[in-house]
Image 1 (cartoon, helix red, strand yellow):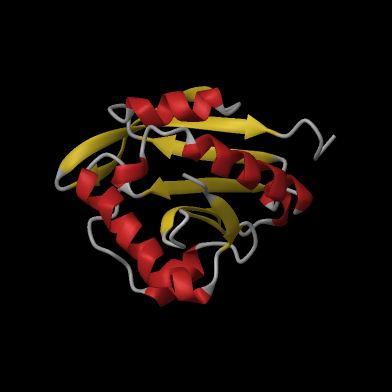
Image 2 (cartoon, rainbow, N blue to C red; image 1 turned 45 degrees about the vertical axis):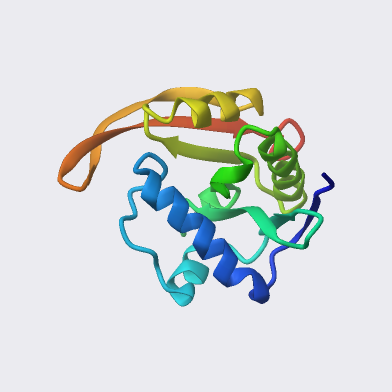
Amino acid sequence: MNYEIREMLPRDETRVLEIFQQGIDSGIATFDTELPNIEAWNSSYLNDCRWVMENENDEVVGWCALKPVSKRECFSGVAEVSIYFDHQYLGKGLGSVLMKKLILDSEMHGFWTLQSNIFPENEASIKFHQKNGFRMVGTRQKVGRLNGEWKDLVMLERRSKTVGF
């Protein structure tokens, strides 16, 4: 099967949210428990570095985007990665292709550090990030609650070898 990566467009919003809902439903991908409306989703992500992957039927099967970690100028080159795939497309190696595109695009936009915060039980996501050049920084213990339960987060980061030197 052939796949194509392209910039995320407004017409993709419904499908992007459907895939995000699968992440919410998994219980190990996000602290979110309810799907945001598209305005809230759009306002939380940067306008640059938004990508989707389509299958040969032009159906979006995965997406990625960056969130700012701070409004402070000194952190303008640091962003948090969100990458989600339709559950039917997990484990096929497609995530690494999309992540490589996101990394290259982030560097073109001046980002020197990408970070991800992942629940420890989401071992596949942790391994995926490490495979794509992220290193484990540490574990933030009981940093937030999900459905009344305190949750830890494993923090991973990837430092650019070309930006910020």
